[in-house]
Image (cartoon, rainbow, N blue to C red; front, side, top):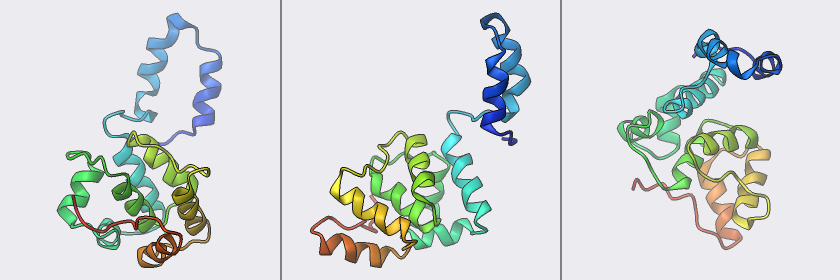
Length: 151
């Protein structure tokens, strides 16, 4: 997927009439996310931007390379939100980047009113990317750890 700022696409859409939508979509298709692969493209872009290697992210998240690739490439789907959170934390994602990844994976974003999520938000905001330290914070407050077991 080539990059074009969303603001620029939004500006273009202001002048598009419904009957011109097909032409707009055709002309700008290369800048749009493939709904089936949006999570993969987003993860890859953010991790590349941070100059990290995918293998590092998988191992830091406690995932085997094959399982991590299946999740990121979306050839295997997980219902375990913590797996996506671990990938984001291992990838040094900000809260905003983590929420975008969760949303693209069709999972609920981190929610400040959820006490466990609040602990995760604080850790991420403080750039605590060590899963063991985050597990300690969660345990200290009586919450489940970000389990590193593959499911």
